[in-house]
Figure (cartoon, helix red, strand yellow):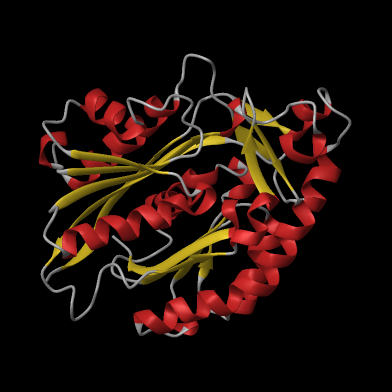
Length: 316
């Protein structure tokens, strides 16, 4: 068996920026109300001519270029998304077609906000099993298409975007794994706390239930992720949590005990982009040079289905 490693990242967001002041002209809200409750100041919103697979393909192309690879070098494409309207072709198949790939295995992963960390673990497992050698793992969501823009409790949260990672086999992985063991699970009886339902589909959540669960139940699970990876929270160079809400990110990071880590706060500029949030935030940290190559980084997704998944990776 070999391990696997993230060797490159990429991200993409639509050009249109929606500020809190813009939202205040649409619904009964204000910049102060939004920033004090969720910490978000801006979010990017795609137009009708920018489908989810286009966002994903842009992020993927950037990651491939950073890795020095061609699209034809990839033999597995995983796209984490919960905003695919069509059942088939899948987002992963559409991305593969956009990039001109040969004959990769293609699979969509719908675990909502923890989709990327689930997909990353799946790619790691496939490579370890010898079923793939180079994978493209993408988180992409267009939350602006499913949010009710008249509901001030939810429309202030959401943004659109995509993030991508190139994952390759790593022969040294058993000694110093580039992607550590995943810890994943869910709370099925509370799954209705986050919903995307109806025709047309609309996002809704029980915000207080999600907040209490995230801030009380998730920190010990995240510490266990570090334990499985053989690192302590103090060893972490960065913590990239799902970018749901600054009032969730900051207390959870503090309770994990990652006192020396850079804490990703991309939610301030991008809003909640669901499955895109972790790879997009990590890509920006790496692009800005805020985390050294090879340093341990905790990725931890949580949200819809009240599911979670996390792993410690070595920064590309």
